[in-house]
Amino acid sequence: MKRVLLMLTSLLLILTMPLPLVSSVYAASTGFDPLRTYVRYEYNDGNNRCSSGFYYSDEFFLKDAEVFSPELAKMGVALAAASYERDDINSVLGADGMGFTSVFNNAGVYERSHNLTYTDNDHVAYSIMRKVIGGKTVYVVPVKGTSANEEWYSDFNLGNGTYHEGFRKAELEVREDLERIMNADGCAPEDRVLFFTGHSRGAAVANLLAGEYSVSEAYAPKEQIFGYTYACPSGTKSADKTLKNIFNFNHPGDLVPLLPLKSWGYDTYGTDRSLIDDLCFANMGIQFERATGRPYQLERSSASYMILLNRFVGNQNNFYNAEIQAVLLLAASALGGCKEHPGNWVDVVEDLISLLSDFLCEKLQLPKTKITKMLVTKIKKLREAALIVFLLQLAAGEIKMMADGNDELIAFIQAYKSQIYEMTDNEFELFLAENFEMLAAIEELVKHPIVTREQFAAALYMSTSTHRSPALRTT
Image 1 (cartoon, rainbow, N blue to C red):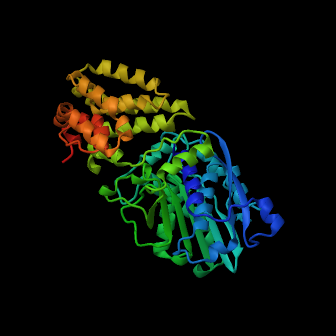
Image 2: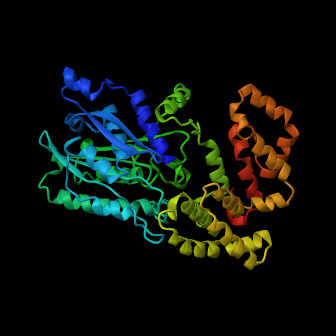
Image 3: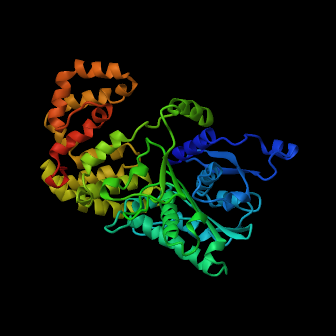
């Protein structure tokens, strides 16, 4: 799904920030815009091999980084997409593409990204390319996003300090290699240009790099440091939002850029930009299906996710509770943590049982031996993403809620939680009026009013909070 959002980002930037859309053949034959080269690139969207292109000129890097550049935004999303595969990013940046030279052998970090383990995963793959343009030494650093592998464990490694620990450790690895190279290039800071880009996890690392180099200006002035990120999670509690040279493009229905929660103090460096407004959302569905051949199923808003998160986790202290950590461990495993290396399940099962057994024994009033057997059975079958829902409900207490006789309310919510988004505002108001008694019963259960579609859709999960341990209750 995250790669689909990246493909959508690329499509949106093409639609909303138009450059002359002519083929490279036409450009070569007519001499159109000789200062720009049409660069084609390939990438994997998670399901299929895709190809696209963008117009490129060396002159892009000689402009003021504090002035937004549509050309660099489109180039950035292309590099972020291509960075998922080493051959793709080397091709688009190399001699046959943008003409940069690799000053860092990225084979090792890409190989490592495919051999992470359950206990060693705070790494990232990246490239460092260099080119001298107009007397400036330009460095381009694309950072790879999360694949379906053990990087998911690192994504949930929040830590206890100023930084998201998983992102911070990965960022420091990139910095070590980049600074070793810059320290040996013989350039003064004013003679360097830095460009950072990435998607998702790669965006978080790229954002930290661009932000911290912009604040210190030790290696280049911030007017020559470009940051263009896509679906960027928050990585630090000390982010400078006043920086004008960093642009974070986010889809409003994507949960990833909202994590870790801003209410906990986390944020991104620079300016956040929404990719979709009300005018183009409907059209995007049509364009996406034309481009991919797949139905457009993205959420318009992340509001229901936020309600769920705030009810389920609450404040940052609750994040470290055993039951929350167990759910995150399960989520990381289901999203990819044990796909490439199934042997990791041995360690995962051991930790899950440790985290959940005592908690569930008390909550479900079942013998510990039975809990252990149930957990092991379910975890061994956890090969489909849908099973994470069962385990989320288990940890949150929905099974206990069902045992308390709320099956009718649960069935009502499940029956209408999708239909309500197809209703007009008047139809939704009528729905609330016609089902007043049922909604009143749900409100009593969740201890929260239901007046919006998002509150109704999230009620199934909100209702579990009435059966959680006291540590999980929110104020």
